Each structure stands twice: as structure tokens, then as C-alpha cells.
Image (cartoon, rainbow, N blue to C red; front, side):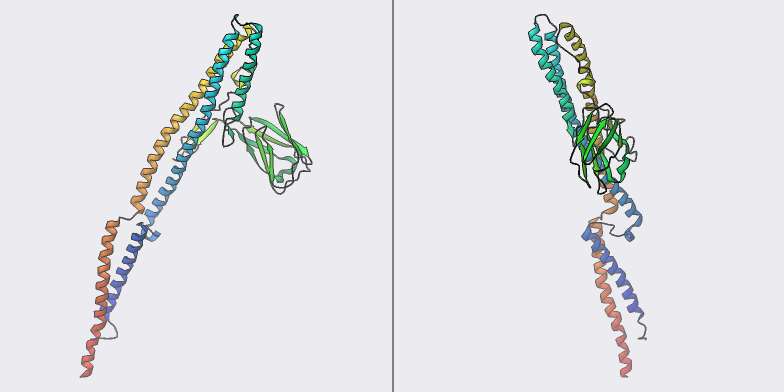
Length: 366
């Protein structure tokens, strides 16, 4: 019998330590609901689960993009439907004016309404917007392809578009007064520009230039801004498969339905001949608007199917992550109960092993 080395106690302590570690691990899993609480639990599984979680978050945002895109297209569709109704009324007026049962005085009144309706078409195309982006004037999807800020480059932070048409714009001015001019001749002047951080708001041209703390209003910027037409009009990322510049996007052709594009800006109902010419132009305009409505409808349907598919992917990816990351509560509770019993037994056996050396006292008593 030996007392310096109690092998039985050492074995009991080793087993008890292992069982207590298992009990603590089971408690962590049961309290968190996760099978993997640290990399040591399953390093490979954690990596896979983290990738799945990233995919799920991207797909969730893609579904939100699809919902917002549907709302945007609904706004565009509403504007197009209104323009279609206006064209129907304009065709009715042109048909009335093209008949000799209408006299010159009647045509004057008809022409007045015709002109007002044409103005309203332009107003609708200019004001149909979604989150600041004009949808029906052909500018949706345009981007800034070049910005040469000239003498005060350090003072400019960014250029933001808000319905700007494609083309080249030049900025000039000094001492708090700046003018932005489009290549086509349109321009806008703003006064009272202050030094430092702010915004040069040329909303009439659909351009805002943000400045930073280095901006000084006493210098002529001699800046040039080049706005490039969007290749697809507008792009909506409604998936997250890895083909980010391709199939993950739904593109919408640029929608341009103002009076000039529709070919009715110069139409007149002042005579029978002019009214007949106007009727042909209105027929063509109705065709253009119907084409635009068809493009919007096709995009809406495609986005709806994409949204349905993405939602299905989110569900399946979430289920796949759950299989890897989440704990099976019944199985883990069985392990926990077993280890609790083993811990109690191990504690009892350690106590017995520690008491076994007490038998040596009998020898010492003689």
C-alpha cells in the first residue's frame, strides 16, 4: 500500500475533469441553442455556416431590392398610364379638329386645351420620381463618367445626379456665384455660395455638386462634368448568385416619354390638315407609350418571379445553416443527463479513492 501516489484518485480526477468539460459544453449548447459556439466545436462546420449566413443576408437584401424595384416600377407605370390617358384625350381633340363641322373659333379653343395637355405630359415626365430619381425623362440610370474639377479640385467631394440628361456640363463662376451650363444651351445660376462643406444645387439641370472643407467660393472652378446615358436605363440587383454584373441584375430600358420624344411637341390643331398630321403623330406617340408600358410590365413580372425564387433560396439556405449550426436539443439533453450522472459518480469515486489511503493507519497502529 502506497500513500505518496494515489493512482486510483488520479484516474478518478482525470475522468471527472473530462466529464465536467462535457457537462459545461452541453450547458453552453443548450443555453445558446447552437451546436457550434466556438471554432473548436467544429471548425469546418463553422466556416460553412458563416458562408451560408453571408449568403442569406445578401439574399435578404436582394429580396428587399426586388420589393423596392417593384414599387419604383409601379410609380413609373402610374405616370405612363396617365400620359396614355392624356394622349387619348389629345387624339379625341385632334379628331374633332380634323372635321369641318368645327369652325375656326372652335379650333382655337381645342388648340388651347391641346397645348395645356402637352405641357402636362412634360410636367409628368419631369416630376415622376422615386427617391429623387426621375423615371420618365430618359435620365434614369445615367452616371457621371468624368469630372474635371479644374482649379479647386480639392474643394469638390462628389457629383450627384437627380434626373440629369446625358451630355457635357460646364461649371464656371466666382465669388459665390456659379453657373452650370449644359452643352445644349440650358443653364442655371446659383448665388450666395459659401466656403467650406455644402452643396451646389443645380436642381434645374438635375445635378448636385457636394463640396468639402477645402472649398473656396472665390475661385473659378472651370469644371467639366460628363454624364453618360445608362446602358440599360436602370439596374436592379435582385439576386446574389455571384454573377453580380449579369444575371443577378434586372435591367430596365430608359423610359423617355416627354412631348419631344413622343413627336408631338410641334403638333398643331389650327387647321384640318394640321389636325390630320397631328393624329398620325399621336398614333405614333401612343405606340411609344404602350411599348414603355410593356417594358415596365415585363420587368415587373421578371422581378416578381425572381423575388419568389430568392425567398425560396433564403428558406433553404437558412435550413442548411440550421443543420450545421443549431443544436439538436433532444440529443444534447441526453448527453447532458448522462454526463451529469457520470460527474456525480466520478465525484463519489474520487472521494472513495481519497479515503482508500486511510487503511494505512491500521498498519501504523500496530
